[in-house]
Amino acid sequence: MSHIFPRHTKQNPPVAVRGDGCYLYDSNGKQYLDASGGAAVSCLGHNDRTVIEAVKAQLDSLAYAHTGFLTSEPAETLADLLIEHAPGDLDRVYLVSGGSEAVEAALKLARQYFVEKGEPQRGRLIARKQSYHGNTMGALSAGGNAWRRAQFGPLLIDMSHIDPCYAYRLQQEGESEEAYGIRAANLLEEELLRVGPETVMAFIAEPVVGATAGAVPAVKGYFKRIREICDQYGILLILDEVMCGMGRTGSLFACEQDGVAPDILCIAKGLGAGYQPIGAMLCSKQIYQAIADGSGFFQHGHTYIGHPCAAAAGVAVVKSLLGRDLVSAADRQGHKLRTALAAEFGTHLNIGDIRGRGLFVGVELVADRMTKAPLDPDRKTAARIKAAAFEAGMICYPMSGTIDGQSGDHVLLAPPFIITDPQIDELVGKLSKAVDAGL
Ligand code: PLP
Image 1 (cartoon, rainbow, N blue to C red):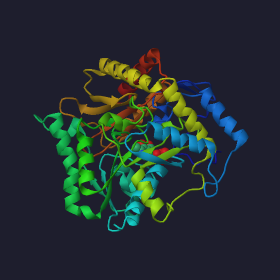
Image 2 (image 1 turned 45 degrees about the vertical axis):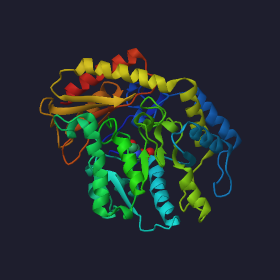
Image 3 (image 1 turned 90 degrees about the vertical axis):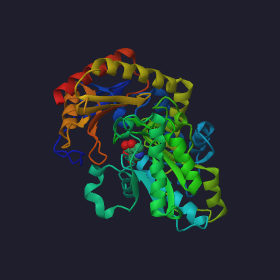
Image 4 (image 1 turned 45 degrees about the horizontal axis):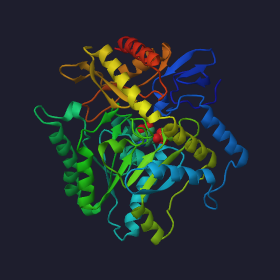
């Protein structure tokens, strides 16, 4: 009998023993095409020797040093590398162990920044309904996924949640994309005015919404207007690129394609590519300086922040992404994947939308593509598709998303950037069968 506390206590998952390229293998020798990179983690694929050797070498020289006393070479190198390529005036990197931790750090930094600046009345966060920012209490409070939040209500912090930018469902008939982007962004201003702008510290959003909606990018102009509103009312813009960052959308940082830079940026998942648990929060010079000139101490920190082995993996991952031109590969193969999906599902009654950027792709399932009626409010279809795909030897990420019950099931696809054309065909073929089996 297993003593592991699994995610799903009614399931008995196979034992993974090996990974190679886009495939994972279990102890019975069964092969699985990793069509979602786990949860958009494995950007380099499995068994990447460069990252493995980098971590091994780091273990041989220095495994751990507490950041309360010492810094380390890989942590310094990773911070330099990230800042060299980061947008806007992001200037400092706070290394953590995952995505939720990066978001928690961002929320606390935003709050401490205003306290140190002498604006202690600013403590409110505005987030979006269609979002996931992590499972720890601050991050869960920021997230807008009703299902994930439901039973933890009494533990959550009061925050505002506005409608997302979700053209497939919320753009009105006859409304241009540009006009919709402005209208959707202006919801932030409305909420600021409703709660009192002087009480708000920050707005948080995913540039391309991942786990809640299935790779939904904002329309052109949305984030530019969001940036303007944040600046006008003196609030910080926090972008959560935990899932969509690190090349996944075809640019190293997703927000580059929206032409905006945040004050705080959260990354994780692809940064460690599955080889080490690592995340990071990047912040602007101005925010860092407020702390440096004030108390001189960010009142946060976990035991494993800045872990040298995790940072060594991060350095090797970023160098691989840039040095092997893998970010362009994500863009190129992403186009091919969406084209192949459109060819396969073009007129399928239950496929409402195929969307995304780079190798961050969402397929929305509906009851009828003409009416866009949600397929399955009781969340069963996604689970059936996941099971059918797994049975056929493919790991993908079907989920139910909700914004006030309007959106239904989707399948999120986020394969490694090294996926080949035949593997794209394999993915689409297996998905097609799994969707039909699950419906
Ligand atoms: N933020 C976003 C956008 C995510 O997609 C996730 C995880 O899926 C998180 C934060 C939380 O990251 P982690 O699971 O590493 O804590």
